Amino acid sequence: MSSPQPLPERAGETTAQDPWPVRLLSLKIADYVDKMSLLWVEGQIVQVSRRSGQATAYLTLRDVDVDMSLNVTIRTSTLDALSTPLAEGARVVVQAKPTFWTKRGSLQLSARQVRPVGVGELLARLEHLRRLLASEGLFDRDRKRPLPFLPGRVGLICGRASAAEKDVVENARRRWPAVQFEIRTVSVQGPSTVPEVSAALRELDADPRVDVIVITRGGGSFEDLLPFSNEALIRAVAKAVTPVVSAIGHDVDTPLLDFVADVRASTPTDAAKKIVPDVREQRAAVEQTRQRVCRAVTSRVHTERRLLISLRSRPAMADPRAMITTRRQELDALTDRARRQVSASVHRACDQIGHLRSQVRALSPLATLERGYAVVQHADGQVVMDRADVALDELLRVRVARGDFGVRPVGKET
Image (cartoon, rainbow, N blue to C red; front, side):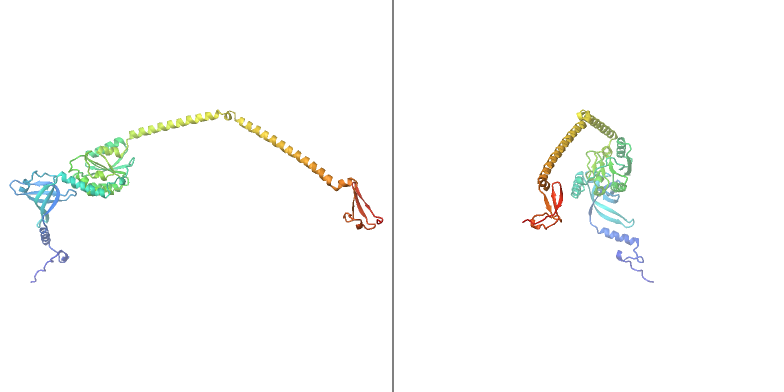
């Protein structure tokens, strides 16, 4: 008979053909957990179970941000040594040794010490976180977006059937009856607050119909409002594209959500006043504007009318033809002046022509001929200038003042 195949020593050596049985895996986990040293862990007490006569008490410790819990065992003498008895909802730090129950496959803590987390310590942690986030610029004023004047749809994140929801919705609709809401009801207290609020915020931020998101809850203790100072929630709000209004608690409550939100409202009722305008105030403003416009238009009409009356009272407007008559008279005077100047110029020119004519006439050959002189010309028209140029019996032309005649020389001069 063959001996059984040895099991793999390490998890990485297991295969589909050579797996670990559940009992071996449970033992391996128990061995690993047993090697862990004492540690400090923080959480919220959600259940305390102790029975009289038993030396061990049982606690349920839940994460303050997510829905996750562990069972804790602790000696009753350790609980009795506390100055203040543990109550459900208290936030504590526990020194414990992790143990793994192989039969049930469950992890639990074996507590050695329990210390309540005081308000002062929580405030110090919040202040450290506030400074850290502020240094990253998450609270800067220049990154805050203005709210729309009149949102088409308001996203509302609130508790289930809470007074905060009623305050926001009723007051907003009282101010602006047509406002529409997209409501997401979530847990606003306890470990499920952060994941549920963050999920609702992402859903509303992705909805293009939503123009503004309001995160609200009523007042509560300092511990009740701690989820609204959670770093994961603060970063989710900082990443949102849609403007966010924080309306957590009352005036004195200042969770870190107030610093990262685009607008902080002191109460849920105040949030309603910030997200929508008052229809009565807007109507009154419109009426005042209409009256101012009417007064301005009436005043302008009266001013223009007075200006028209002033213009019409001027002489030129009283008798429009007076300007034409004046211009016509000026035109007639200019025309007469031009006519006289032209006539005078013509007369002067005529006189000059007469003088020139007399001068030309006095200097012309004809005037010389009229004084008894004659012009003798050869047959070709040349003027006889020398007696020697005249041939015997040459026919010459003699031109006198009143006509001409031909002559022939009869002999030469001796």
